[in-house]
Amino acid sequence: MLVLGIETSCDETGIALYDSDRGLLADALHSQVDIHAEFGGVVPELASRDHIRKLIPLVRQVLAEVKLDLQDLGGIAYTAGPGLVGALMVGAGFGRTLAWALDIPAIAVHHMEAHLLAPLIEQEQLSSKQRPTLPFIALLVSGGHTLLVQVNGIGDYQLLGESLDDAVGEAFDKAAKMLDLGYPGGPHLARCAESGDPARWQFPRPMTDRPGLDFSFSGLKTFTLNTIHAISERGPLSEQDRADVARAFEEAVVATLVIKCRRALAQTGLKQLLVAGGVSANQRLRAQLKEQLDAQLIYAPLALCTDNGAMIAYAGALRLRAGEREPLGVRVRARWPLVELNAVAGPP
Ligand code: KG4
Ligand code: ZN
Image (tube, rainbow, N blue to C red; front, side):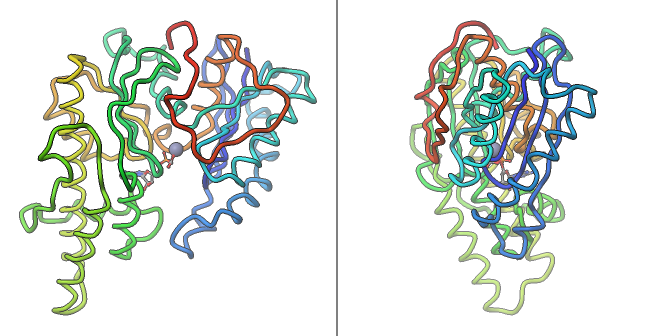
């Protein structure tokens, strides 16, 4: 089945074509970074309006790339949450309506399930040694979520731990903003941290001194702000100061994530860790997980770590294959716990 995937939960319009037999055929992305950069964060109403402008041209573009047309589609998958309600409504309204007009099934996709499944899209290209077997542990780290889950099957997720306050990507973005590093902050902060001195400061590793798998990043954010204030009392921050703060922040976040992943693996006795979501693109995180954990690590290619339409098309294709269908109404959810999903039969 040829599935059109539509992602509009935040500030990227992602459109892709995934075919159950031939794999990922086309994947187009329009980033709204330029629109939101001057505000230092995503402006929801501007995001919705830009999705409206980009959806149809991107759908035309992916179909043209593979010389197919709307009549060739077998299903339409769209992100229905969690995310910005207005932005979600644009993609969901468009996707559900198009499916109705073409008389093909539609499927509402959970954005974090799609992130979780993204590393499996290019399965055919993985050796069997790299392919995960159920159950496995997943660390989902994005701008809105930080989750540790045991994956027993598609839709069968057991929550092991989550952030009690800020998501890890959000903490990266806020720390980057404090350092005037630009938006979106994560990649900018990571770049800046490269020239930082890791020995200058040791920032706290939140919630690692007690048992449990939950996270908290708001205290680390305050610690970062206090450090910046203390430096600026002596004068403006130098480039080196900025890099040192960025490095201390990144080291603390990465160390915290590594500790919790190690605990989750020990607690469950599992040996495979899938890491997904925007922050899984972070190279220091990848290096430290590799160095410190005795586990098989599974990632998506870098382009599929951050938001994209391919993961929505793929997650939707798996659920459509299992017989799931979305009724005619257009429903979206700003908040949507991953554990509320229905389990579907069959391996990913
Ligand atoms: O998954 P994603 O694209 O969108 C959400 O679902 O939220 O994740 C975006 C988040 C942002 O907070 C961004 O700063 C962060 O992922 N991010 C990174 C890196 N690349 C993206 N954080 C740290 N290092 C990176 N290389
Ligand atoms: Zn995302």
